[in-house]
Length: 392
Image (cartoon, rainbow, N blue to C red; front, top):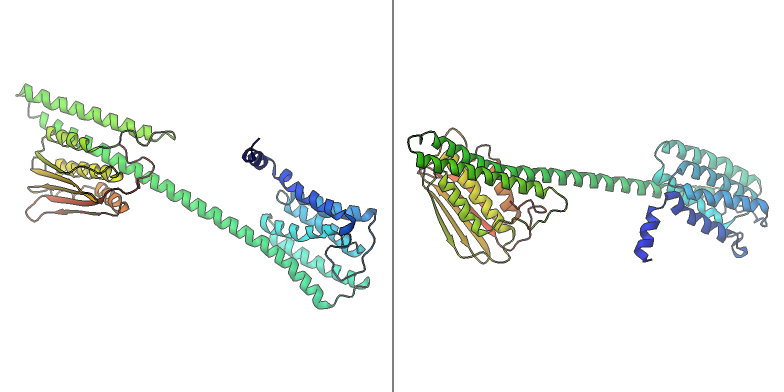
């Protein structure tokens, strides 16, 4: 059995089982003759010889440590009782070190009545100090104060551990919420890119088909294009659903430069005159830059179909050693009934993607009409698109 398996088995044990060995270890050490009288002393009473009652004191101080995390209040009460007997009888057993351990555990794990517990311990310490003093202790008043401060320090350490644990849990909760929000944003972004483009193309094609009833050949071609676009949308949506599976392959269906030509051809079939120019070839380490390039062209062509249908559209993509440059422009007058990009979600998503890769993105209306989308995307960057969501 490997050490890792043993560690895993130990972690799966109940917390009481995992906390018991410390108490047994201290108890065993306390029974060693060499450690008799080597424990904590309050008041400096003469050390009493070890007897049967001393064994009971050791048991009271050590065995409750097994429940120091499960029932910290019970542990603290029993250990305190044993500690009081130990000091009043003058055994000074080694097991008395269980008192600060119980205080630290209570400070760290006690959920309710923390102030009450601290007040009761403080109130109980006063009669203990008086009783020890009357039994003939030689300790001065400042000694009792210093010992009380030491006990308070142990409680404070436990409280600090509790605060640290709470802060870490809160940090993890915020991190999980931020991750879920980012995941929802990525899903919404991908749905927008996939659905909007295909549905827009289908709507434009269907509108054109209304005026082709007198031209059966052209009508059949247009309806075929609508069907093809719908099938492509279904395929892309199915692929997105596959990406939702925990065991999906993030490399399946990655966008490639060849798909840009397919995208342009689909837009042409929807009735948009598109000129496509591609310079150079993508670097092997282009990574997410190729995908972002695809999404930029897709969103720009979708906007061209929606707001400048029938206007000349030019797509230029240049692959350099360090970056990919994209430029999509549309001639003519863009519809004033809607802002460029409609709700702006698509363009905002593109800007976020480009910014994540350290690039530059702009989308503006042209002076003579139409619009112009430009982007510079550093090639060779890490995949910053979030665990495969950038695959469509």
